[in-house]
Image 1 (tube, rainbow, N blue to C red):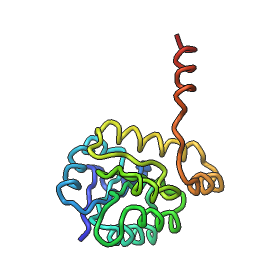
Image 2: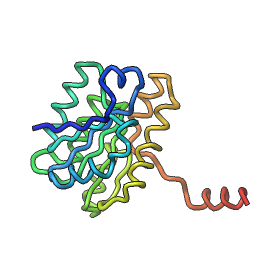
Image 3: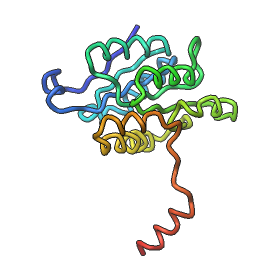
Image 4: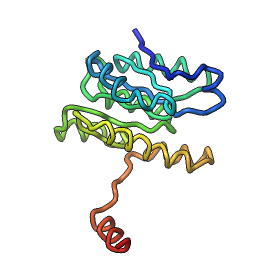
Amino acid sequence: LRQRQRGRMSRPAMEKQRMTRILFVDDEPNIREGMRRMLRSMRNEWDMEFAESGEAALDVMAEWRSAQKPFDVVVSDMRMPGMDGADLLSRVKEISPDSVRLILSGHSDTASIMKTVGNAHQYLNKPCDPELLKRTIKRAFALRTLLQDEHLQKIVGEIGSLPSLPVVYREVMASLQK
C-alpha cells in the first residue's frame, strides 16, 4: 500500500512550477506519519511520496518513471524487512543514477554505515532535527540544480558519496569572514 502526500497545488500548477520530487521510505507507519507532519511546511516546494518498503519504493519509482517524472531525492531508512535501505539505494543508483540518495537511520553502527558506502550520498541519524533534514536535502539537491547539463548530472549521480568540508577549511573561511 502506497501512501501519497501532496501540497495544495493542483497537478497542472505543479507541472508549471517544477517541484523537487522526494521519495521517503520507512517501514514504520509512525515514522512516515511523523515525517509528513515534520515536512508539511515544505509541501509547496517538494512533491513528496511515502513508501513503506524498499519493494514499494521501487514500484512507486517505476510508476513515476513511466510518466517521465523521476524522483530527485530518495531518503530511506536503513533497517527494513525484506530489502534494506542499502540494497534499495543500490537499485535506485542503477535505475535512477541522477537521484540524490540519503539514508536516515536510527542505527549508526559501523557495519550499517559501511554497507551504504557507494550507494548513499549521505547518512543521517534518527532522530534527525527537521531543519537538518531540510538543509541536507536542499544542499544535496542544489548541486544537481546548478549542473543543468544532463551529462554532468549523471556523473555527479554516480559519485559514491558527497564529502563534507574539512574542519580546517571551515575554520579558515570563518577567519577570513571576520
